[in-house]
Structures are given as structure tokens and as C-alpha cells.
Amino acid sequence: MQTSSIHLDAAARIPVLEPLRRVNEALLDLLRSFTAEEWHRPTVHPDRNVKDLTAHLLQTTLMRVSIARDRYRLPTEPIANIDHLIALIQRNNREFMTAMSWVSPRILIELIEV
Image 1 (cartoon, rainbow, N blue to C red):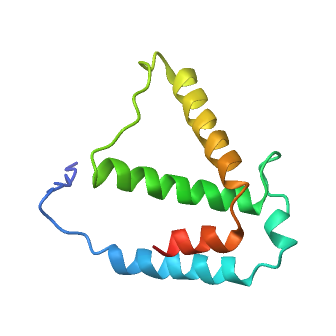
Image 2 (cartoon, helix red, strand yellow):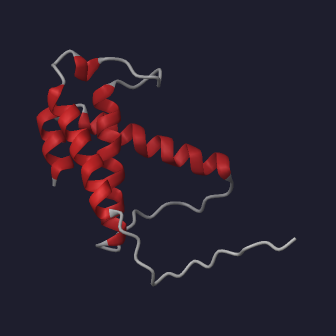
């Protein structure tokens, strides 16, 4: 039996920008449709509402741009194991969502648009 191998070439461009733009537009359309009450609705995560998860999406984007474009990383202590990594990620998520609790949903939407 012969198996086929897949060769991944880093130079091969994969056209994902347009589909991701459509997904982002759909997300923005959904966020713009929320009422004030819907922003505070619970989600499947027991401690996070819709606004918290929206802030989390923004945090991920801001962090990726900071790292990829600006080569900026917040210094952290060495990660010893997977539990330490998970704790670091969860702490960063909580800190950002807490900071964004002071920000209006409209500002979150505008930042995601950018």
C-alpha cells in the first residue's frame, strides 16, 4: 500500500483574507444587532457574558498585532508546564476583560472594526 505525502510549502499563499473578512463582517453585524440587555446575557462560560467574550476576541486580535507587527511581547516568567501556561492565559483573559468592563459595547465594536 502506498501512502501519499503532503508537502507544505511556506511560499504557497493560501487565500484566507477574504473569507476571514466575511466572517469578521458577520461578527460585527451580529454585535451591532445586540440590545443593551443582550450584551450582558450569560454564555456557556459560567463567569463570562457576551460583552466579556467580545472583549476576549478583541484581546486576541490586539495581542497578535502587537506580536506580529510590532514584535512586542510582555515579558513573562518561564512557563514550566501546561498548567502554568493555562493559568497565564486565563489570568491575562481575566485582566483584559476586567479592564474592558469600563468600555462601552460601541467602543468594543469600533476597535474590532479597526
